[in-house]
Length: 511
Image (cartoon, rainbow, N blue to C red):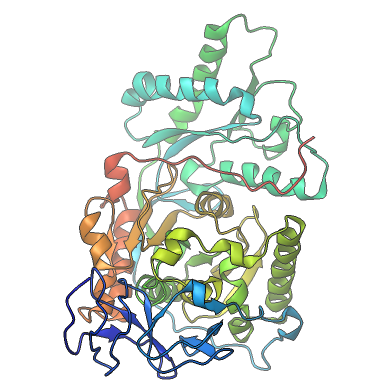
């Protein structure tokens, strides 16, 4: 903690707030006078909240101009306000959500922006040129990983226009209730991942032979370029025969991928998935608003943006209906929120379980505060559509893609939806990176950006210090996205070679 001093700056987000955020790295000591005139009664860590007035028991703690919790006991002016001192308010009623009387106006168009991408036969555009090898069952994952290493060392050198080969492994396919209603979620996720634009339409599936999830369920009927094989094929004798068969099939896919070249594409072909993880109190005032501004720019350019994480939208869902492009969007929002409420209830949990120990150490006092910051990633434009977990995007513009909030599950589902660029904000820090899609890491505070200088791509902590505005940060991120999508700029995590596994969301029974 810094020594007590006078007029130390803090951050009050909204005029109606009765708390402000400590901006001093390392925190501030009791006795410090803030620029608001409040004198601290407690030592308060960096990013945490201080009461600006006396808040009585049962009264609301207000941030972003709305209640984020109810005080359990008196919180005197100058005291530290954290998760132990407040209770969650009730979640917004889904029954109260109504369509707007007048649809929101479209954002003004933004023309003239392009990137260099790979055009696909189905009309989509990739930002990478990758061979993805899918599996129908986890049993074959080790064999496929082995073959991928051989392809990288033996084949990729003779296919210089192919960026990489990725094993699209998972833990599904065996011992599962394949016909259970919720099994559709992992099945369509696996199928749609194989169709991601970064794989160039080349679908290759390796199966075992006795699994419940058949490779045909992953492949699109009539796709002449798709291929499959089974390790249990009686014509294959020994491990070498299995691996040689996979390598031979891979060659035909690599031949086609190697003929592809980057072409100038409109920014309208961007499909950007936005997500946050390891969030802190700055996420909702720096990084996520910057993403929101960039989201509006992408939508204005005719592109597609996804925001997700149901539990991190649930407490802010009442803010979204007025942005619904049509009444069906509101009904679909209600459907996905209600489904997830029921899903959590079946597991004996609720939305409060979302907030992690790291979130709380970073100054977030609960899911309501986290949600208000998280939804800022969606920007200000109309919401054109809502899709369920594992579904593909159906419309351009801004889509709510319903997913769990877990980083790897959310990223996997956004990949299945068709994203070709991933944006990930963090305040606590995470080395998360998808192997299939460029993942731009955005630090919410400059302390993290400095400490993790070789893991972060963008420092939005400069918004909190007044060095840049949200608008300036949004334009900066937009141009960075175009450079990464074009292959001109490599992300920090890609430079380091970091890759995380894909993780399916499977709410269905395992038999």
